[in-house]
Length: 114
Image (cartoon, rainbow, N blue to C red):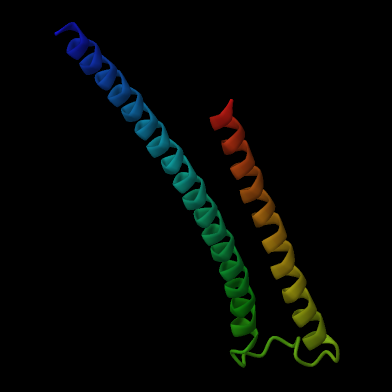
């Protein structure tokens, strides 16, 4: 009778060990999925920033495309200046905003791990 009790206790201990291993595996998988989700959210944020910068450029183009007289259209290099200024502004806005979001993401990840 005592042999059966010992076998039952060893089976219970093995089951507890397996349960702990299963819980640990679930937690690891959950952390990996969280990391992937966070990376996708970060990429989505960068794409939103890029679309905002393109929208800013199209807004400038639409303002100058309204056929209103403002005497800038008479200047021989006005088109080039506006085009270059808009493109440079879009690139600068994207660089600054993406840098801000990268710093925010790295600060948040350092905060969580600390």
